[in-house]
Image (cartoon, rainbow, N blue to C red; front, side, top):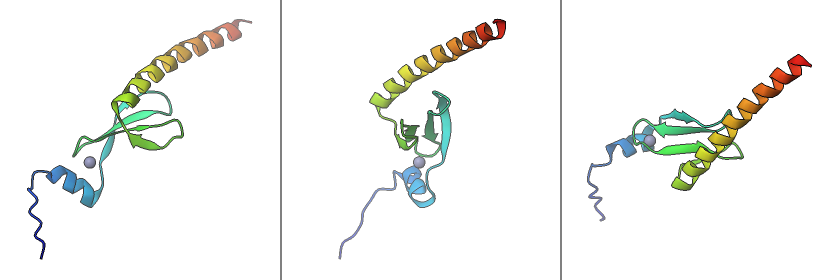
Length: 88
Ligand SMILES: [Zn+2]
């Protein structure tokens, strides 16, 4: 007979295993891409280019920072365009 002698140190994770993660938006990167953090185990997710949720790795964090920059620049430009087209 095997005895499971797991220490009860990972209660938040166990909670998530039982009830599922409670992800909350921790950062809005672009209109489509957001970063989520689980309020129980602090696991982080992000939206990838296909719109699927994936684990937020340091690589994706960097990608998101770049995406955010591009997104903000685009937003600024589109504002300019709208401004220009409303003149002509
Ligand atoms: Zn969780």
